[in-house]
Length: 359
Image (cartoon, rainbow, N blue to C red; front, side):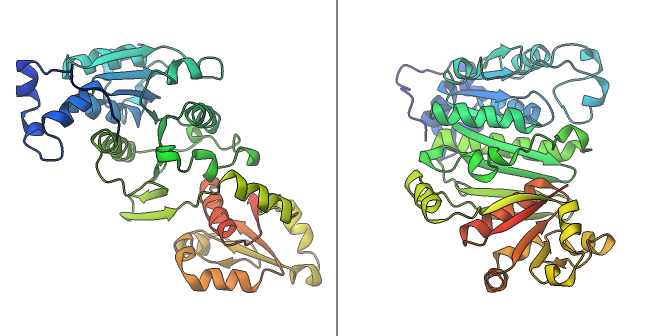
């Protein structure tokens, strides 16, 4: 829960009418509405995720919304970036977003930052806000957000989309996990850019609304079930996975490093795998685990690979199987980096050394 000084905060007569349906909810009430009015939220990225997030945050009565983006609106944005229309083509996203939000809620103060976030400006911008929403689409920017939210002790709500899949998590809340606990900067994910993938508007809309929902829950002090979890949604088969992320403090990390010379995860190329598979003796020392869904595996798979879908990694028998074969080199394969890293971190928690095949 945020703890702003709400004593000097008052609602106007029109705000009482505007938020009438909020005020009769036990979990909100007058005090909760004042908390919302006092809150300062920064949304980094005014695209498919950022648009629905800021739309519902403004309509809920957030007092201050900061938007940072340097991009212009084009026709291809309109299928998912719901704040814009054809009349806004070639306009700056943050300028158009501000005009639209002020029409939705004139009591919401919208602060525009018409540039990209980077190492030079991140600290100055982020320090003024209570909660930071990551609505970006590339790993380089996500690491910048992670770094400065951690340094400035700011709550960081992360989201990402790819085709029908999306992810959501809360970082730096009550000194818990951060983004780099899931995706370590050492593994260099910059080659994987979300702009290269297609996306449907309802996928970004779904995750953007959930991002706004978690923001409201933090402000009001409501129950956060996803703290220390990574939520993975697949809207194609309407599935939700809760992946527990285990936080290791600095002492534990030092201890592991001192007593263990082996890396718990590492990237390996396909060419290196093919080289190791030339001879039967070398093959006997390797296990390739394809973590894709069964239908993906059946269409195309690597020779000698076994299929254990990602959902199976919450089962004890899967962990037992991998532990039983720890004398061999365990190699994880998936066509998406984030799934490989997620499974790698689960294995890491159980002390199972593993390698990830880099696409």
